[in-house]
Length: 449
Image: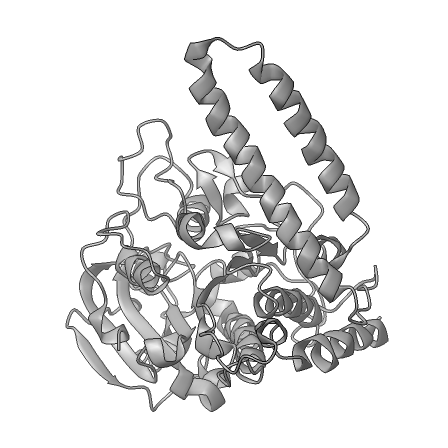
C-alpha cells in the first residue's frame, strides 16, 4: 500500500508538478508571462488546540488537578493589546513551521461569538467560514450563511472547471454525528457543499477522462428539455426560464473547460490511488497532494480541506503516535491526564500543514514565482481550546501570498477582533470589492503590502 502511494506521488510530483503551468504552453512564442492568479485554501483542524503548546507566552502554563473551571482560569490568557512583531520564536506545536516561518503569519486574538441553542462543536465547524452575526439568520438555529469559499468563488470561479473543491480526511464510515460536525463549506443556510473523503473518488473527479462524455450527455439532455419547456411557457415565466437556462449554459461551459484541460492532463502518467488502508499521516498527505495538483493545474482557485470532524468519538489510529486507536475529542476533555498525547496530536496536524506549505513552496509557476506565492493557505480551528469550548483567541496561521502579503509576523489582534476581519481581508486579496463580510469590522492592514 505504501508502494502504491509512493508510485502515485511520484507520478504527480515527478511528472505533473514538474511541468510549468499550461500558460507557458498557451503563450507560444509570446514572451509575455501572465501573472499567476491568487488562490485560496482553508485547512481546518477540529477541536481546537492545547493552548500552552500553540500560543506564545502560554508555554509554561500548568494545568491544575481540578475541574474544567480551573483549567479555564489557567488557560486562555488572551493578550488584549494589539501588537505586531517578527515571528522569530516558535512554540512546540508551531515548531514544524520553522523552515518556512518567513512565509507565514501567526494571527492571534481573533474571536467568534457563540450563538446559544446549538452544539458548540457543530457550530464551531459549520459556521467557521461563515461567521454570521449571532441571530442574524432568522430561518435557522445556526448562525450559518454562505461561506467565504463560495462567496469568493462567485467572483473568481467562472473560469475554472471547478468553482470550489471540498476535501475531507474523515475516513470514518459510521454516521456518528450530523453534517454540521463534518463540513465547513456551505452554499448557504442549510445547503451543504458536500466534501469528498475518498482519494480514489477525488482522483477520478479531477483527472479521469472516462466520465466526461457522461457529464456532457446529462447536460445536453437537460438543455434539450429546457428548450422544449420554453415553448410551453407564458410571457410571465420567460424571465425565470432565461435565468435557469443561463445557469445550465454556465455549467456546460465549465464542463467544456474541464474537458479541454483534462485532454492535456490525460497525457500525463498518473497512477490512481490504491483502494487500501493508508496510515493517517499518509492519508492526509495524499489528499493534500491531490489538492495541490488541482491548484497548480488550475482546476480550481478555491478549496477547503477538513482534517477531521468535530466531536466524533469513534477513534482514529494515529499511526506512529499511539499503539492503539484514540479519540481526539475524548483526549481534549481529559487534558489533566492526556496532555502529552494531545500535544502530540496537535503537532501531528501542524506537521501535515507544514508538509503542504513546503510542497507549494517547491513548485514553480510560469513566471518564476512559487505556488505558495500565489495561494492564501490558512490553518485554523473554530475553537480556541477544545477542553473549554472557548470561541475566543482562535489558533490561526496564514501561509503564502507572496508579494501581495507581508509575512514572517506574529500579529496579535486586540481582544474582541472578529475572525471575519481576516475573511474580509482575504476576500479583498482575492479581488472582491466587499465592504464587509459577516460581522467584520475592518481589514487587517498589517497583512497587506
